[in-house]
Image 1 (tube, rainbow, N blue to C red):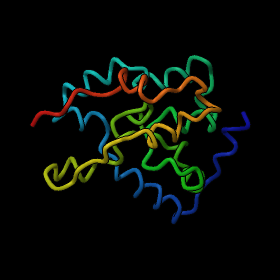
Image 2: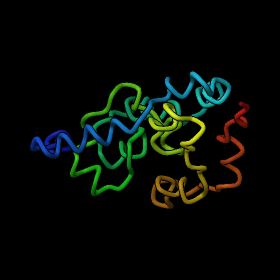
Image 3: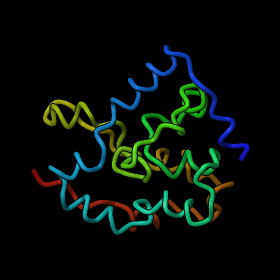
Image 4: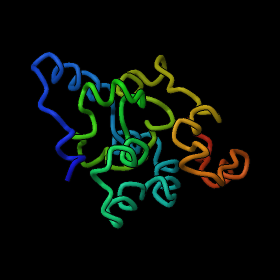
Length: 153
């Protein structure tokens, strides 16, 4: 498969950059410790099944699809490619989880009162929901289906 071959071997420096990038992620299981109602809601959405969608149609190694069906520390395609991020996903990153929309949350999980995750907006969604990938995307309508319940502390 050509897409598998495209994932070149990285130098030690590049591998170190990749590890630093992934170290910024907390993972949805960590998020669930404080945000269980939001996690329960998310688990019932299509975002939670994004990787499985690719797997069912045998596109789980297609980088053009994969970049939007997983949780990454960045969605900058140049960085994703240069750091070989798609080839080194942990199991819990094989989904569109909290950090896909709210950004890397490791610091938030360690210091929740001083490290606030970003509030996603339409621009966040449009990183993946482009006209080429989703010609039926309507932010207002889709938000009704994906917006997590408000966090109560």
